Image 1 (cartoon, each protein chain N blue to C red):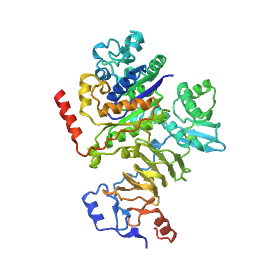
Image 2: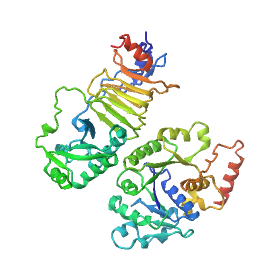
Image 3: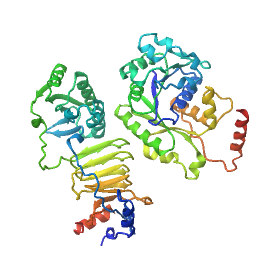
Image 4: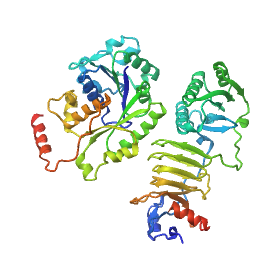
Length: 294
Length: 268
């Protein structure tokens, strides 16, 4: 029997006192568990959460910019500003540098984002720094198309938003996993509709939101939210689990007040009784092999 | 070839300006031509710390507005003439200057100086963007507190995204006795989070306050101080020398510390 099933009596008492966020409670074996909190934010990933994405397809890279939220244009908090987009692009390029062959051509999918010649040049420069080459621009805005053509890229103007943004509201398969080799520092924010794999540390103040699993090959000291669209089967794994807060689907847990003296690779999952538990990676996979989970 | 170094931290009050003033002075003492730029438009302090307030005639904004030539705005230090200050305007705000203009300004200065030190304002908004735009290197100043370290971490991330790769760490206002009692983050604790090379550790020292108020950077002081020596060492490391880190562990008898305290209270 695995050691992660015994819940100490104190677990429920603590969560009664502070029902908003329950702490992860260490049990006798050094594993942790927590009470569920129904109020946990499970809004999932919405269109406004879209980030700069790089996706390889048929020997070229697609660079997708987040859309501009025209309906809320007067509210700067609702969509990314140009400088934030550019910064995100640079960070993503740094984090995946060695995954692309030099001189790969890049197709920019600008959607409805308005780009002038200078901004296009900034994107092209950032790509050149990563030894990539901007060749083609897809856009639904006439001004962007004109700017791109003037700068000398081949342009494809598509009028229909739906055509550019095929991800409808219907249930869909997740995106391919996002792989990043980077240290995510305070303020760093990764959102992805799929599984996220990070080779590096998550520093305090950073956050990762994924609709799939989250794998951290390093220290997890920020906030991680797996299964953000509500899949409680999702997992969070880290070589060293010291999170501020972890969320799986709509369950929330915070770190225990007294961190364990020693760290092992650990896995966080939602136990059948509706609590987030943490188990050592070795024991977790063994337990899974005998079908103990679920 | 001149080096453009921005001194930044994210959080305010950790000692960016003090560090800039002391490093500028220490480098000038070693015969380098140094220009310190106050990029904190609207809240300028660097001229005070250098004791040059009453010599400021024109500011960077006047230069950009075309009201004077760049050379006219530069203030020569009264002690070491190889140290110059480009003061910030006090009557404008950070939005008065654009990154492009700042870059132009710094590039115009690189020809005449060995070092261009830019004193960055706190925060990560326009003032920060202005200060880092022309820099090739950065010195991150932090104190051993979680808030300062968290902000420093954020700033390091932003610098990386802006292609400033040479980033080094100064831990300021360390109190060895508190570290020993486990009441303060140690150098190792800070480094564990920030994971960038360390270029200096400056102990907390009351005399820094005195020197700030007098407008005389500590590195000029006749009486050697730990903080002053620490800044001197950072300047030497910037120059490429290998300098051992000072032993800041607390002496067992505490006699030296007590003597120094008595001495400094009598003086001031």
